[in-house]
Image 1 (cartoon, one colour):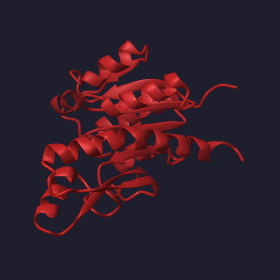
Image 2: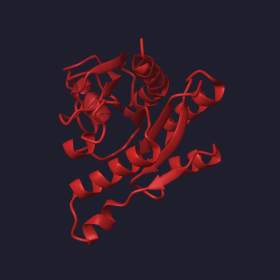
Image 3: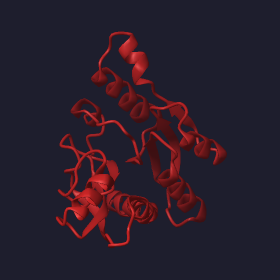
Length: 204
């Protein structure tokens, strides 16, 4: 029986991607990563993918803008490329620093797009979630933050939650301490989320 297929989109170093690669190689995640795409050609995650023998694609928003095209044109190009050329069972956003438009999501009608976000549902949606959680802690507004994996909808970070984990913030924490603790949890939860998602996709 063939393994379910996963496409991953990244923008940076790809440490969460590495967690997925390691899990597929060890058999902890029974899936095959068929492509890793990035909107930054210098993203180190592309090297991680290449080392693991995974095909890579680079998508440049700047090229679209230089031609007078829009972010939506770019989104449609990325979505069509991923969907038509690779037909993944699951698309994982692992640090993809680009908000997806409804036009992108229309290419994935099964709602099989999953995002990792370093905050709990409804707590710190959008960018700079870790910094905002740390600031809120310093102001006495929260004593914890967390990480979640959720389905992607047009409303940013508001899709159905697949799995989540609460992370305490300690009085001795620097921002770097908190970031490190969150990232170590991210590496676990992104694999866990993919496992749950792919299990749900199986015909019952």
